[in-house]
Length: 332
Image (cartoon, rainbow, N blue to C red; front, side):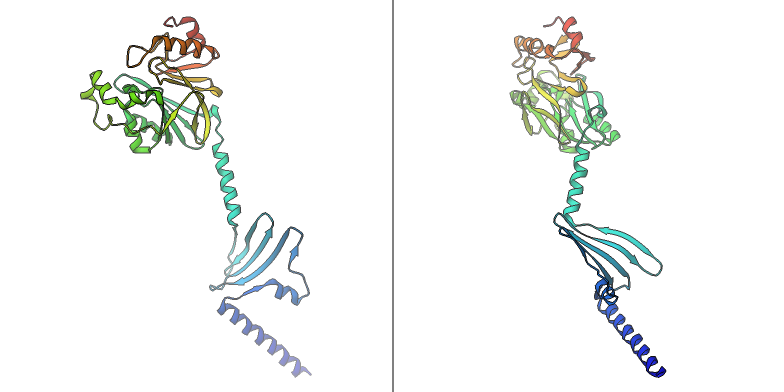
């Protein structure tokens, strides 16, 4: 009797060993159903919407991996519950592509939410006529736009690098030469989109003539004098876009030039007026297609209707605000 029992035990050990070697050599997957069924236990948990299954796997390196496969109507994924290699346990997850894409989209939406109060605004004076250039960036997305890069692109690039910003767009208040001479260098470095009112496109194409007319031809490099075409023609009521979000509104204010515009950042009460409105003054109207009647109408009929507390950032000189200009600007 003892001899029979001993033989049965030996046969059991031998069969288990052979089975283990086959599994290890062939890389077969053994589900826990084989093991748990042996002990009369259920391995598949299911409901009307979700199925869960655990798997035991021996891979080619001899690692024992227990995985949980879960599927439902909305998603599917496989989670590696345990991977062991001689005293080493690793926990990791492998997600379904649908879940990954959903998480990426959610992350993108979070980055797209700009807090206007957190905008980083830098001011540099550039070009032969000391133009106020404004660099406006979103620290969350590291995206930036530039208003009126009037020259010295290396100065603007330095600020962008210091802030770790990627330039995605250039917004022009108008197309006079002193407001556009930095475009070529920035376009080469970052390839940003260029936004301009279509009524100033002829002026934009006249850059070499403008430079010659003002006597700066010898001081302007040939590369700076060749402008890439605008990417987008803006108009009254359009929006300034930063990282996919609307951050300001475009107001057409002809007079200094036919396509002059102002950019109003409503949520932070800042307006960038180019050469339409200065502190105690307005832009000259004796240049190509300039009109005093139009600039007076633009300032009094449009800009002075905004709230007094809105700060004014012009194309030249110091800043001001609408309230001050209403009572102190006698140019219009």
